[in-house]
Length: 262
Image (cartoon, rainbow, N blue to C red; front, side):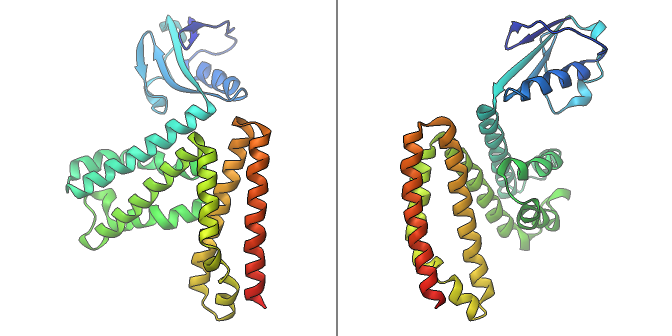
């Protein structure tokens, strides 16, 4: 069997592998070590979905003449995954707005895959996204058809929020410097509000304080992700300038919080 990656033949020696799934798993492990990922499979020029393993993994190598894998790098894969999930929730939004139970049923077929992968992709605590997104979805009845009238508006807002988060993650990868500046400016603009956290806790206004802590955590997490991207894609001077600016912002925020705490 001829094995190709991006239409180019490679020298891959078969050992004990007898099925397509075994070969793909071996190649996938080898590619991941180099930060490359398989996003499409072709068997004798017929395309198969990578995650639909049942359709291709048990095919015998003796029956195949050619295996071609379409491979992309880690950054491209992350962008593609984010876009796919964004489009998924856009389609779900449209189906709800159109009161289209047939379309909703089609989308629920991918629900388990989305649920199992979105936390890792977004680097979010799975318990948070379960509580903020998947529990409301399951409680709304949408997995069985249309959501209940009382849950419709809430669900649409939650979909809007996750779509914005997914798009924000894409922008972090595509335009890290611009997004870093934007996030830093948001921190500056919110300095006075965030500095109220110690006082709110002292006044037992835990809910308000927690909301601000969540905002602060997300902003800082975003900045750290962007710094990681800058360290890979930009020159070291760019990262040093951004890091220096960030230190000044955090210093001002820390001083403001200390003043409120006294």
